[in-house]
Length: 482
Ligand code: SF4
Ligand code: SF4
Image (cartoon, rainbow, N blue to C red; front, side, top):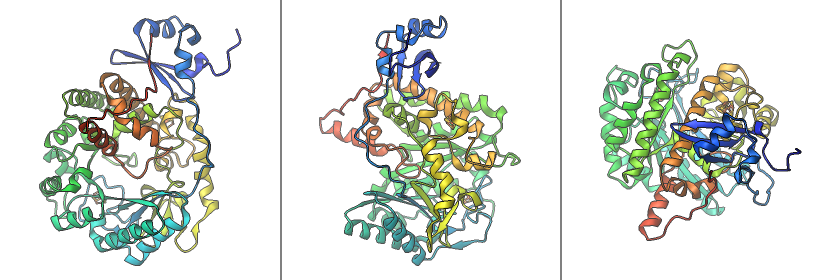
């Protein structure tokens, strides 16, 4: 029988079973449906054709696209590396304590202002984002504040919006500094790996003392200020902390913030802290425990956001193919203290990722492979069932482990896949989760607004609305099919 136009072929459907629940995903359209056990068995075990399941093809069809606009390839997210120095000596630091293979140095306020001008002059987007990064950006606070004021001033004059974000190790977050950042509307990502022992082993001061006590104190102070609602606490796990669940549970219980990110380290394979394939079972189990905690907390009215799952949850609710997870080299560009342009902060110092400088602007010849990768996807993703949802993994990791943009890092892929599976299960288990993220999913483009943007924006928004007696609008994107 000839397949009707728009109906997915069996080869386009990925069937999954996650913690007792069953799903069908269309690998081309990013649409998915939950199935009952009997239907799943017919499709997966008896190999029945999907078109024999009433309603399934319609759910898995592509959503009608909103009217097409010419897609802009201009940058809209700028990462400013204002300080190539750091006041910590983390054992897993991939930034060479901010030096990226060079020497310790800082960006001048003049270069920072020029970088802001570069963003406004090269971008046609109405919503821009600036992320301050390092090393440790608070070591160059005056350049941060003066360029942030400059960005806000230009935005006001040009009727644009600019969001300001700062990624810090937290050591310099004194009350006075927090107030100054708060006045300008900054959101923050602060590094904290969890329990004292684990954090202090990996994140010492140069004299060897652990930094946990200092950072916990600063986070508690921040939590009592308005800026506390805009803080994400970010941890890193390594080979030594592959069973990382107790560390995230600690962060949840300490309530430094309801916005948490807990991400794997990616280091050269020779590094003693680099993750290995044999760590996968521990990591998978840690994610499973975390997913159960996430579900319990949401059900008990004590929800927290976890970036690692939330990214997948938003994409599953959005249910449209996306091009890239972060837009590196296209929507996102990083600037070093010298004014060199790189695809993102993580790729600083990599020749393939050097895309020009503030003097001459973006070098379109060097940028071409990044644009092509953005437009056409990654060759190495062609057969993956997640290719429409995932955005193709990290470009810097592809270069670091596979020497080019063509092939993703397979160990990272296994983690991404595991998180997507659990995110499907979480969407089924948590009543109201889909509605809570649907606003954000509708507005999410093919890449994130800026680095580590947490879901607090949409969830606070959802909470605010229900406080005012309005229910969040529900847009059922994917349905249960039986
Ligand atoms: S705080 Fe960041 S830049 Fe500084 S040593 Fe630690 S990982 Fe490296
Ligand atoms: S990066 Fe990995 S998980 Fe993502 S689409 Fe490509 S192959 Fe799949």
